[in-house]
Length: 323
Image 1 (cartoon, rainbow, N blue to C red):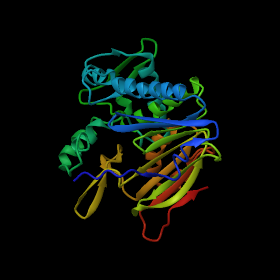
Image 2 (cartoon, rainbow, N blue to C red):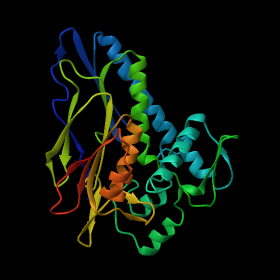
Image 3 (cartoon, helix red, strand yellow):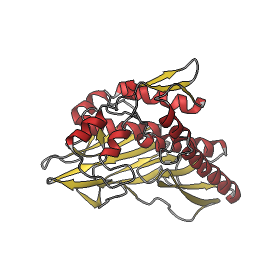
Image 4 (cartoon, one colour):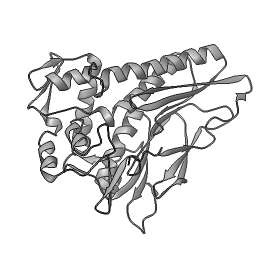
């Protein structure tokens, strides 16, 4: 059975329907396998609605570029052809792939956009997951590794070093999309908005009327009907990676979709990581290496402008904000 639980609870998210001379508008779109939503405040209803529509259109555009479910997407074209030779790509996709490689190096390989073969063999691609044979895991693992993606900046091409390599944008696409949506809102003059990508990653622009920021409650991974912490966000992003988002149970263990690309197995030892950062691409990506590499590695390597709420899978270990 597929278990999908929204990892963020929005505390007082929408507030009152009006704030002095300000009005509220909201909109949503089904894209990137999630519901993207925008709530915004401003003085002009028409301007708000136009800005929200443009931001949601941007999410759809990026899905058309990055989806590994759509055969017509630019990323799917790379997956089909790059093992046979260099594939010329757009500036935008090339920059994203360069950025992904930088994150992979900085995270000791625990963030890896080539994790696609493992997600498929474990049944998390278009499915709820299942336990594969060890030979299947080893076979898929042999095709994983960001070093197998060769980027040629001079010619703006992408090439795979072998057959079987496959890019999976699941760990970066939503975060990148949210940041782009926020830029569009800013360019439209919007100063107060909250953008959500399936509620697993959000960005809080400014603050709602009469509030210091957007109030967000983080779910307790041991009891998702309760909250474990709250945060007030202003010009910040928050993302959560948790073993309760998508998982299956086998051999008495919970196997989540958070894959360790070094071992070929879902990561164990952590229940959830929630991360507050200035950009959504950072919170979306870094939540996974922190989850995989654990509390001590996170403490030693987290940036000073990050805030991390860490929940270890230990009976006597409470969820805590890391310093």
